Image (tube, rainbow, N blue to C red):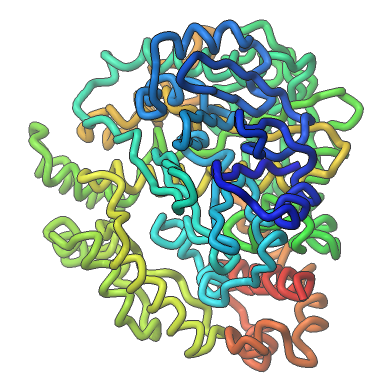
Length: 600
């Protein structure tokens, strides 16, 4: 059930009744007797206070925290603005942090938005909630066609687009922000977190990272008798498995097997499962397809925040629930965000070139040769000095008729969205308008360092995905989803790594390799092969084709909004592409069409 936070002002009874209908009974009241937080008690709640402030934690991650612990943390604090360090420690996993002093309130979600907060104003009253759909339902809001247009592209990988709600009039917090509410005024975003400087070495950070991963797992698994986890054969999930074993937790593990006989991920997953002594379950990757075709997948019931970058992941939720149903697991962990935190990102070469690292120019040249980057494009990429605002203004006047500038664009702070040919001129105009609006907002780039900024963009994406996975979970299935790599402590340590060491990717993911548990062989980080799932992209599109033809044969809801051309969609269904990316774009258009019809 959602939580709705109200200002300390008189409210008309009918508004309170409407909120109670969607959020449940009143949890907390002001001394005046007016409601403060409306919700239910299905999640763990910890409450403490002193003579000046009341503090409330809501979420099942608080399993090991008591009211006494919370009282000690706020001892001597007299204002909600004094709680930055306490809230940073407590608002993690699925925990929401609320504090109130007289007529001022603090509302805070986890750093990378695995739970998030949003607000709108109804009849002059600001309503804050952890559930965008609850706010939509209470206020009677409609989908925002501009945001829906952006969800038909990959624009969500930039926080300028990814933080926009699909519901008109709903505002959201960003990473490292809390909401400052005073009386009946709309909440104001306050920044409580900034990323660290990337100026430390692997040797300095390895022990800290090892402790942080153990701490993040201990925090998330507390109160869970059985735990399951992805075990893909990749580095992120495998490392988590060994850390779980170090904590004495033997997880039930899940592997999705590729139809590509050259994909050796299964060998590494089997080896890790054997070394961990895990209850290991392997199913074909194609097992996801029937769930993707299910009429409920991608509807407003399973995707209340709209279609987007998590479409395929959301389709896997009922599959995981079914496969793990007999294990008794109540928590399923994944390795989301590990690639961004520890691996290569496209802005890395620019940051290396502009750093003070020794031999940076030679290493830039070697990187170019190794990856077969064209010389001219590489030079344009590393010499670019554009800005975040400049990139947004570029998008605000782009015609989206030409492809982005390839490798030369790798250093951009806001990349050009990948726009499918079926999108209309109206959709293009919506994208331009969103970019122009983002350029005029108070939000700016997440870090002055381009690599840190890009990593943070990706962490917000993964936070959105984890949050939406939990929204898509079947009521009553009892499995929560989380990624420990989105823990603030892990992120801060990884972001502190010098670009010279981050860009030296042998062994792969050098910081994670240095921090791995002693029982985990370095072989996992030096493997010469890497899994490829292109075959699954083609198989998925073949399965979706009949649905696509059926949905768009007589027009479409997206076409009614002039966002896509149904005729172009049908014409492109049978066009061949070697990369499969166009197929993925078409499949996402199908999900968006299904979602919009379910809203109507």
